[in-house]
Structures are given as C-alpha cells and as structure tokens.
Image 1 (cartoon, rainbow, N blue to C red):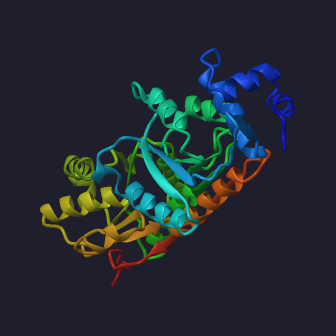
Image 2 (cartoon, rainbow, N blue to C red):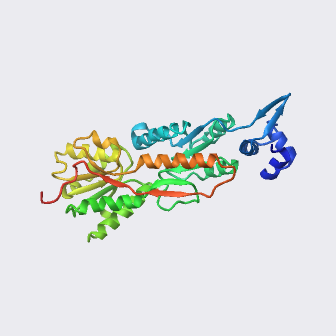
Image 3 (tube, one colour):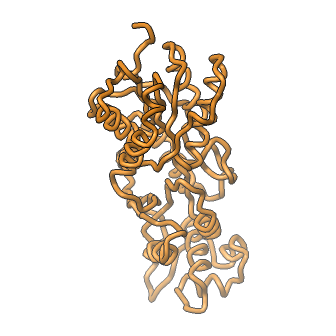
Length: 340
C-alpha cells in the first residue's frame, strides 16, 4: 500500500500537504487537492477515517464531453458525433456527460471546477473549434486525461492527444470529385474556422492538380448555418448561375445552398452540382439527396474513447498521440458528369 510520504514524493509536495489535501483542508487550493487526489486514485491509497478503511479507487467510469454552446441546428454534425461518442463509450461501460463549457464564456471555469470537485468525471473528450489553452493547461496541471476530437486542424497548435479527420485531404477529394466529372467553373462556400481553412487549401490544390487556376474569388465565406448559406447564395446569385458546381464545406450549409438554389428556379444537378462535407444523414433528407465528403465518424469516436480510457487507466502520463483519418466521398447523385 502506498504511503503519504510516497504520494508526496510523486506529487512534488510535502507530506503535510498531502495529508491536508486528502482531508479536504481549506488551506490547500482546489487544484492541489485534485492533483493529489488523482495520484492517490492511481496508486490505490487507503484512507483511514475513524476506524474505517476507504480505498480510493477510480470506478466512476464517466467521461465529460466539452463542447461550445451553439444553437442545436447550427451544430447538427457535432450533435451527431456526440451521439456516436456516447454509443462508443457505453460499449466500454462508460457514461458520458455533455458539458457546454469554454473558458471564453463568463463563469465557465467556475462550472468546470464545480464538476471536478464532485469527483465524478474520469477524463474529457474536447470538441471545441478553437484550441482553449486555459482549459488545456488547467486539466494538464490537475493531471486529468483529455483527448481532442475533431476541429483540431491539419497542424495542431499543441502537442496534444488528438483524433481528427484530415480536412486538407477532404478539400482535395472534393475538387477531384468535381473535376473528374468535367466541371471547370467551380465555387466553394466556406467558414472562418481553422478546419475550413484546411478544406479550402486542399480544394484549391485539387483544382490546380486538375490544371485549373485556383481563384480566391471563387471562395465565398459565410457562417456555418443553414440561414447564412442561404443568404450567401442570394447575395452571389450571379456567380452561382455561371458556375457548374459548388463545394459546400459543411452539410448544414449545403442544405441551405440547395434550398436557395431551388428558390431561384435552378435544378440540381442539371444547372449546378452540389457536394457537401460531413457525410452524415442530413444529406439523405434533402431533395435531391447530395454527395458529401464524409468523416469516418464511427472510427473517429471509437479511437477517441479508446485513447482516453487508455490514458485514464495509466498510472503514468503517456506521450500524446495525434491521429488523422482520411475522409471519403459519399455519392448520392447531386453531381452530374458534364456532357451527360
């Protein structure tokens, strides 16, 4: 059985600090208490209280999922991914708790501290679009395992545990899908987030590989929502009437584009072809159903959960691992071949 002096050596604090932390003494900061508690959990420390022996063990089996607080229909893909994540965790006998927490929101760090003080959560899957350095450093200081899922970009800003799609390759595949079918007048609709920058870069490189001159003027920016995409088509309708195809860099935006194109009396794919990006079931409920660059979401969520559980079960910190999976094209008939 590990002793308080041994715990102190591992934690880099005095033995008295360990004793006060484990007895929840108010003179010890929450961060220090949590860090020492987690070390005690890892090493199976036995707490003696009034003749009772309490083994500190990590048996809660709960994963927290940190997400941004966005309107439900603007983040349908994230909600879909969380559903797959819940299923993957459940298959390994873990529960999940969704926590809309970002350090950019007032009071969020206090809420995160409250959740941690309840001693329920073993680790976190983080699905923030922007790297949240404050949360990363906070969880790292406490020694709480966390894995980033999606939105991490082609070049991660930190040496972190990460599972993501190769978004650059996704953009390249979209360009290849359209140009291989004879399209030359191609637009793309994108957003001001990093994963979309990667998709745009890959898309323009794919056009160049097909012998086309990449034109930044064909890149239209809007917010990642149905309504914003609909308005973007309306504002740039002359460009859409001249184009033969459009690569829309999220499926919720693609649904907005299709609705706007129909409102102008244009046919898909007869007048203009459409390919989205995400690849989940939203593409099946529009008319017509649309092609999409699909994330291998089942594999992504399985890998994220497996990696997190691996880190939770390790007595020592593990070297971060960064995994990027190749996307693929789902064809549903919204891209025609020129000349057919």
